[in-house]
Image (cartoon, rainbow over the protein chains, first blue to last red):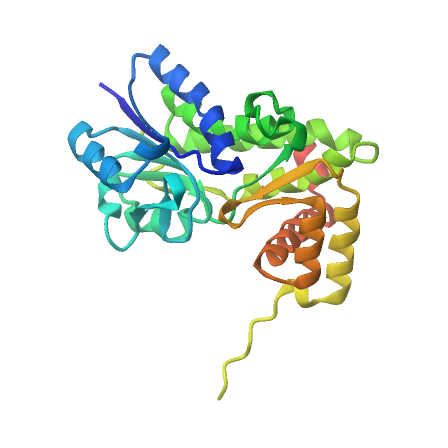
Length: 214
Length: 80
């Protein structure tokens, strides 16, 4: 049976948006009879994550939160996974990390034949509208970024491989860019959003075994 | 022999001016999340680019990656 473990820290605007938009992933997983362990807010902590990874042994891990080349962080930026200390906990699983830069070293550190790590090797960037900061799900501008990001997880949940899921996400980023391009001269949002979408699309990578499914 | 200092893209005055000009076209209601560095308003991003710090460098890299892609024909490739 597939099991999804997802971290949803929620201590600033960025993590709040990721947390709210991750609800679609949880919904999709439940609809496919995938057991979900949701480490929300304070539960997105190192001790909790390590314990659940060992006990529940999920096939699919989604890590929301800030990151660095070597780490992924949780609630209040507590370090959760570090390439040098506990990245072996991600081995044998498919992980999608919406955490900046972590694919650079952490992703490579845990990637092998039994493991896939999909993530970003630079900062994950997205734009929000000030009027929707307290209502993330109503923010259509942020949706342009977070729907393609979610597509990685949704594609895996549908049964696709890690590489297919990454490519599906890139196609959605690309589709959004193509939709915005014709209005780039009239719409200042479009002009800025295409550059940021292009960046995210380019820096989404799949390390390890791209042929794995969850 | 002393190590050659890596030049930051945001040290280039012309590039900085170009990026600032593009940022000035953004709507003031935009709030941009740049990974772990934080969330910034348009004016804060402009300030950071002018300062040339890590945030400014990242914003500059994002803009230049897109502009270079435009020059290399990304629009044609996207619609192929």
